[in-house]
Structures are given as C-alpha cells and as structure tokens.
Length: 184
Image (tube, rainbow, N blue to C red):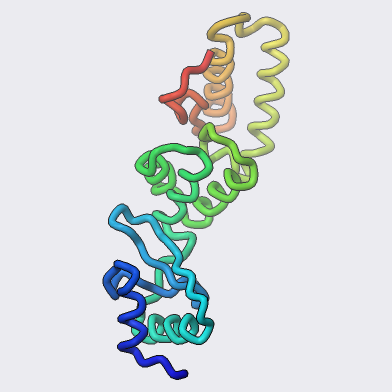
C-alpha cells in the first residue's frame, strides 16, 4: 500500500503532536520534542509506513538535531548524573563539540555521578594530573594535609595550585565542580 503525504502527516499528528514537531533522526528513526525540549522516539510497527514517513520528513528538510547536539548531550549527561539540565548545559556549552561528546561518553561508560573538570579527559593533561595526584597522595601519607575533616579539600587546593603554578593547567576541584555536594 502506498502512503500519501497527507496520510503520513495525519498519522503522525494523531499522536498528539503537530506535524512540525516531528523529524527524522539519522534517517532511521522518527522523533519529536516535547515543550521542555526532551526528545522522544516514535515507534511505528508498519515498516512501510515508517520508511515512507522518514522519506517524507527527510524530503521536507525535517531532519532532527544530531544525538550529539548540545541539548541532546546535556540531557544524556543529566540521565547519568541526575544533575539539572541547566547545570549540564552550563558545563558543556564552553567545550568544543568533540570534547562535549567525549565528556558525556565518559560519564555514560563510567556511570559517575560527581562532575569532574572536563580538562581531566584531555589526553595532554591526563599524565600531568596523574603525576600531580601521585605526589599529592605521597604528601597526604606524610600527613601534609592533616587528617580527618577538611583533608580532602586541602589536598585538592594543593593539586589545583601545583597544576596552575608548575604546569600552567587551570583545573577545577571536585568541590568547585559539585557545589551542591558536601565534601569532608
């Protein structure tokens, strides 16, 4: 059975969304956004209807934002960290697109909930940070940062200073990245 454009539009709108809310996603899925901007996918059991709808949406230029758009990445990060979308957007916005994707994929693979400074995933910074953290661990074991409450915060302040002063790396501490979390 051949599906007309009008039939396809009517079918999609029967799902409670206007025609202009729908788009094809990677030329394989039909999606739409709600009022909050969250993306949903529409499952169509009739393969011919689904293929015709994707062709129509694509032909009319109704292709959706990539799964890696800023808003989509912020929602992916939110799903893993349970942080508000505004915080996720604020964190991702200044990053180049490739770093945004790497940052979110890191969280999806590790399932971490505390935010880290994106610079920690920079391949050039990773060995420097590892070396500074190892030195901080030695100093902690020697009692340099005290023991008990506040020791972790003093350690992070030392790491931040060492990275900035010795290596020229601007790094934000876990406390700075997670102001809504109480650390020791």
